[in-house]
Image (cartoon, rainbow, N blue to C red; front, side, top):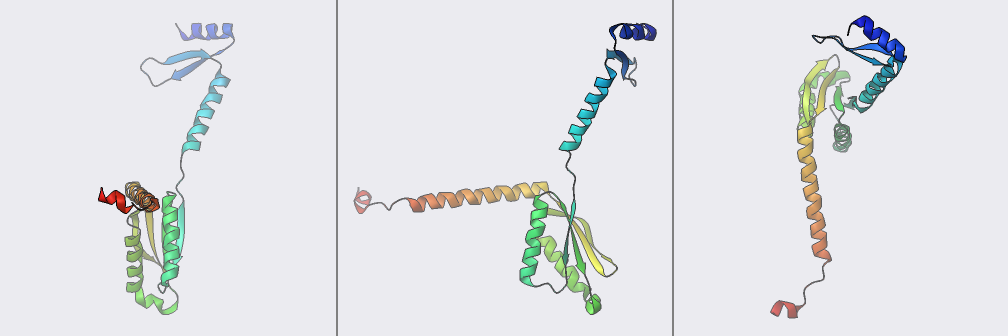
Length: 177
């Protein structure tokens, strides 16, 4: 069928002749309602955008002289962010004469990296930028799955222990038999 015949056939039915795959060896055309076709394509694109996960970068700011409890709070927040599959930017800001102790800062960032290694991987190694040192951690799905399996195993073990403790002790007569 030629293009002219296709166009006239489409006009007779009150529809459009649409080229579906122009890059094929033999171009493929269909007779259909073009407005409806465009609408369906837009719906498919919107659905694909909905299912797409945008990765956000969450920032955690620390100081070289951070105390233990504050460190634990920041670490807990970082684990939560990584659990939500967001990247974590750790910013260590220097003030005044703290710039002289960059070795302490690098040790602190190494400690953070080591504490989060079960659920993250280093995407951007620690680097000085002006008066701050920056490191970016990305969620590591394989490591996160291992941690989740370990956590489930611990929970199952705890439930089993509770059930055993809840059972009444065996009577001495039952032990003798």
